[in-house]
Amino acid sequence: MKPTSELLLRIALCALTVPVIVLFYRHQPHISPTTVALTFLLAVLIVSARWGFWYATFVAVLATLAFNYFFLPPIGTFNIADPQNWAALLAFLATAMIAGQLSERARRETVRANQRRKEIERLYSFSQHLLTVESVPELLNSLPRHITENFGASGAAIFVAGRSDVYRSSPETQGIETDVLESVAARGEPVMEFEKGLAFVPMRLGVKSIGSIGLSGTTLSPQSLEAMATLVGIAVERTRAIENVGKAEASRENEKLRSAILDSIAHEFRTPLTAIKASVTSLLSGGFDGGQQNELLTVINEESDRLNHLVEEATQMARLESNQVELDRKPHKIGEAIARALEDAKKTLAKHPIEVNAGDNLPLVSFDLELIVNVLSQLVENAAKYSPPGAPIKISVESNTSQLLVSVADRGPGIDEFEQALIFDKFYRGKDNRYSVQGTGMGLAIVKAVVEAHGGTVGLTSQVGQGSVFWFSLPLQTGR
Image (cartoon, rainbow, N blue to C red):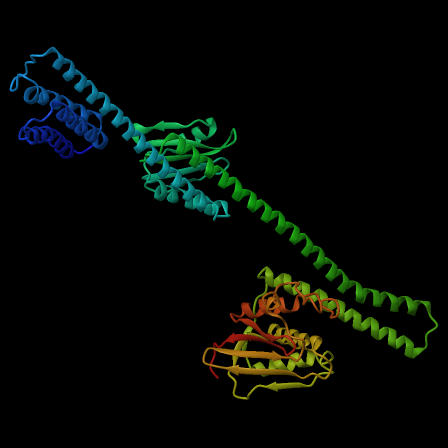
């Protein structure tokens, strides 16, 4: 409905159109009535094209009366002397009415065509947005707001079968009842309540309904509403398919990783068990002198220690991941932890000169001594494993007002940027050394878990061919 003031203005302009034409032609000598009739007819067409049939009808009636009164003899009366003029007058009125109706029809078709074009453009833009989202929750949460913005609706809501939530453009969405959405989704038939400004359409995939969409304050045609709902249904199924493919791929990769981990752990456990079994079998067979027996017993002892170390690592990793480790934090000098770590790793470090750069005036730090000793042991043993014999290993300690920084530098092969992002992950081992260096890939993961449990951070600086520097920080909580 147009505002009253606009209606009155249009009626006034229509009423003025006829007098203006009459005044213009009344001052033109020897003017032909045909010319006047065609001018009136042109005015009717213009009004019909601009404002519609009923305005054009009003102008046509006024023009007929004015044509009769001012231009058909006897002039100045509504009488018609010549019967031919009756035919002309009726022909003019009929022509004006028909021309106005045709013009109105053309105008309506033009308006509908423009509306359909805009709706198609909106649907295209809407489909482009749907292609950018690859998560079902993200899609459903963003769609109602995007529908209201893109299609000029005052509110929108989406219901998807199998989900308990109804996704709305805003909490204040009025009139879009959940019961109606569920009913439309179940029946698969649209419900149009244009008098209330409401529309409910099912989201179909072929003949299957997977949900429904409700809109308030919409001016979309039923065809565009159904097209939009179909696009949303396709987008929901598409994102579901992408998620399922991703889950399937992740499951395959997880299975491959699990197999690789089990192979790695089985290999690490099998190696000492095989050595122990072979040594025990040899001892039981007899025929060895004292020196040979001692050598076999030494193998059994070393491999038993190695096996025990593997079990301890796995147990500690499990406890750290389940947050079952209680820190026994007390003020300590970091030098105490370094000395104990070097003593524990003395056998591994036998072929490497060690340089420790830690001043005597370093502050006391509150930490669990046993766990930090384990961290340092892991780092120095890791440096020894991956460095060539004779390559030095350097331990440095620095402090500032907030933290203590400990670093372990080696002269190993270095780690490329891709692997640096993975090196602290559980069970990850370098691609170039995973088969040549013993280990389960849990050492650095334990280091990370222990340091983070203390509120610190771990990191790595490395250059391929130049070596690596592993570092960790501990927050300062006590004075010197």
